[in-house]
Length: 352
Image (cartoon, rainbow, N blue to C red; front, top):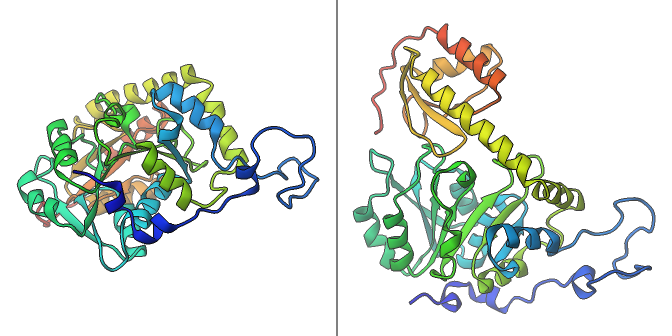
């Protein structure tokens, strides 16, 4: 049975989080002399350290209690804080499936945590037989599952994810950065079924706020309480909180923009399949397409020469580029460029 007390690092259990001036006084006043702020200016006051207004809006939208929500400085903070809460440096381990989001390995290295990277099957699904031996390892504390996955674009099978949630006694973090674009449902509805589940989402993708750097974690209230104890006191600025609230107050526009992107993805996928240079367009549940070409390095460089930037993912999936769905004008420019690229064949064999 999962036990949060057994999985949280002992020093974190003993930690008394920093109590800021804005934590100790909640409400409105006329004179603020408690936080050593400058009395002049328009941004002279510290931001809400608990981001209550955002949590209340998300609570209504997502159907979860506000005490089940953590707001982070990008989803990268959600990832990093998880390592700091649950993994003893130089002792514990984490696990993920590759190819996937690169920050898992970076955060693991920063925190001196061994990261086990299990290759996905040829269909980009999780190989449960390869995973099973690790589920009983008591030093394994975290499993990261990116679904929809970056850069492959696919979602993992629900039966596999729920199997992992049932069998693993550590923390399972499902990274749903691209879930708003997906036809699959978020795992938020299962929060109360699995006490070891953390769901990571972001305002950087479908919400169009990459420059704001705001991520979200959803989990049971006991986990969120530990997150709030470990995070910096004022981790989200006033300006960034206001930008998020403005977006959350205009859900109709969010849906319009999201549907434009999804419609453009359908058009772009069809048109890419008609270009001889492109050997395969992988199905995608995200706002990008992974394409296989004969020589990804050459195609990437020729696009750069035309001032079109894609993501060369050949180091993860052989001879593949990841293409973000842009505006109609941007997508048409990409297609024109690809139609006139002539590259030599690559001699490198596929990794999958």
